[in-house]
Figure 1 (tube, rainbow, N blue to C red):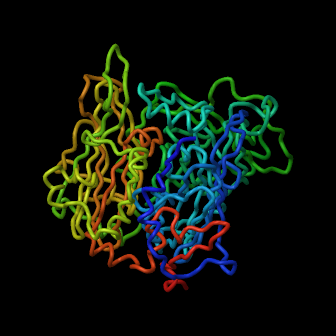
Figure 2 (cartoon, rainbow, N blue to C red):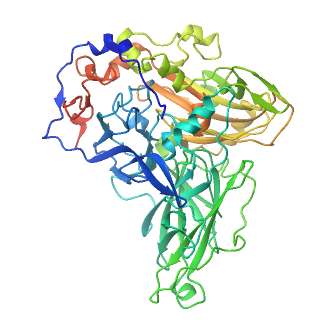
Length: 605
């Protein structure tokens, strides 16, 4: 499996740096959670696959954090000859320095046979639904798990029970094969997933017909007359899914990407890679289900905006006094009709519940700079001929891809560590001459005090085919300004916000509005607004959360704040010393105890 190897000889200057003493995590230190990354054979869709997993399963164990409490999570890398990191999706700004989990941006990855202690402290207002996943290569396909942040006090909404439902994709081909094809000359696409999973089960076979439980429907047990918070968390590699529940269309959205929202009624679920939504669902009364003809209802999910529709089933099963046997067969046709339209789902609908965040929303008059980023496929070798991309294909932002594999081959020092080592950040003046991008460091710099509109544009490239892209921001949530066909008109779009304040998000979709058109045509945009403050300075990624697209270069690096800002916020030498080199003293092993900086220690209750 070829995933981010480093030339150790080239790193000797860093390895030679002297360690500074901080707090030794010896036998007296006990982390709150332990995640162990291994390469195991797991059953998915009743087929065995060699996969990177946490604690032996996919999805891995659910982690529970609480606002205003520090949690330590130890991650062991026991994957032979491969690096691993963990990204705390949606909680970037709440992780200690060098702990965002983005290799070659915020930290060095964890070498094989070593471990790293991550320190995370959600703040008040962070309560919500998140997940964790590896950020190396294609490992996130299976190396992921749900992460829930509990409210410090009473939740903003009343409900009886809380249910997490994690959605994933399944490929029979192994990570190494998929990644090699995406980077190959000629390029080889991964194809569509063989199945979509809910809580690790594909729902393609009934319990009577399945070879094992991995291809049966996941069963959601509920009681009559209760209100449930259903947390849908999408860890898919590619798929955007729609989901409905038979005879249950009374969903109320109360959270998006870790932000409480004002209640919004909707009749079905839609979620793409990286997104999370919480829905309140009130179940039927006891008289309706326990004394009637039906106490089990099918849950149907289907992919959208791809050449092939992938489907599966789960089952909503009521607890009644008389236990009802599971259905012996799946439905011959879907009992739920799901719309094909994706681009209007909850657009200009979700408002934040936090008055503090609503008051902080910058108006268009406060925007100091707009950065427009056009996304499309390019050929870095070969040519497009006879309807085929014959060569090496990349996804590019304004013509330039950013590939983790390329950075690793050149022993790229992580951007955040470069600031510590050199005292330099990307050239802001040069970036202003190139639409916000510094071509020398290949990063987008921003200064504290700026208010940015970041506009993603969907271009169909040489093939003329559009795709959808769930765009994800690390570091801090952004005010989602919505989306539309054509190109972005700031003045026209601002009309939406006269009596409406968009909620803070970290993953929203750049949609497609047609399947194919005249090549090299831009049609579709998504816009974000963010204020750069002392709270969000650092080195962060913004990228498409489709794993294939990210491997192919659909990622950007942003550096918020100058060197003085960054060095002033984060710990200084000697407390950072062990983080500045690959496999440094902040990384532990069987033979060495890590020397770790406790960033949040003084803030604990």
